Length: 400
Picture 1: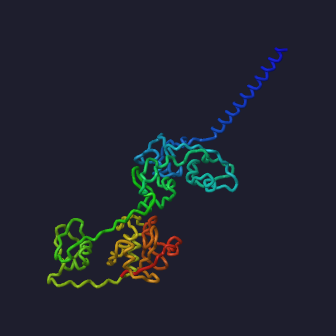
Picture 2: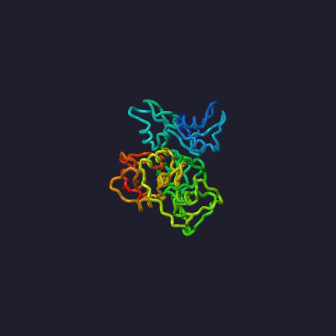
Picture 3: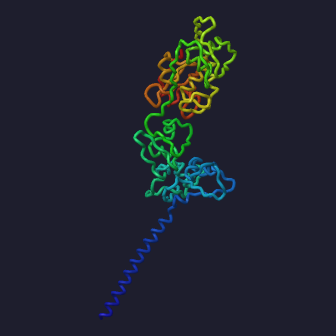
């Protein structure tokens, strides 16, 4: 009897142990099944093939050449066959779940649901277009993954600046600080998306100040001037309150050419007081034709030459070409101009953008359009009814 009871207990114990082992095994199986469905971000590498270029690889994977350079610590565009390139931000530790495309889905909807951008969704799935089909399996961020954008940049310093580190891009920095690439470029006077390690960027506050030329203090009673390196007739004339025509007349010059060491006279031979040149009537059509010559010239903060203009530098350059001198900053142009209720060709139209008061301006060319140097467009023609500019229009003034 005692032996029978003992055997029964052993049998039940073995059954219980088998059940426990089965449960553990099943759990481990589920665990490994779940793990195998996830793809590590570190698998997003690419081996360079014959005929590849950085531009081709970047375009195919919906990333920029600059990101490829940053992520792989490349200092040039040179690559070689067999080289391994990372297609993601270094040091990111992302796992992905699988998502099956349903009827009515789109990349923008899926990206929104998983709090990523369309570009990121296309990149992790190596998509070259926005076309997806029902039943297609896509990689999407796992809810328990770490931040898909890689290392979190340091908090901005007290003055609202940030130092660029390896792996950074404008889009990454903009996303971290809740702003846009356009705003970052505007704040820092950037004309492209290129940034470099160690570069200091403003991530908040006002845009970098445009340099304003300070007029030198000069003795208006001097009679002669010795030309120095970097001088021009227009610069000398402006400094001493004369016109280029007067300078050329006083010195019998047939051209604008001068040389270092040359002595220029500021009065005529008879030393009589020179008669100021009559005010020149502005030819609006000639002014507009001159302005259109620079269509497409890029925006450069503080720029005042055809290699790059800011808005007031563009106005200053074009008006000077017509023999009309105007102030260098939008605010001072606004302060000295004559207000007009309806702009005419050649008048200056003003807008308020990044700060209160006049901060942007362009030349009215008729047909409710104006030409200006925009921060994101360079020199371009824009309709006054454009929703952005119409809401920021301050008024128009005539240049006296």
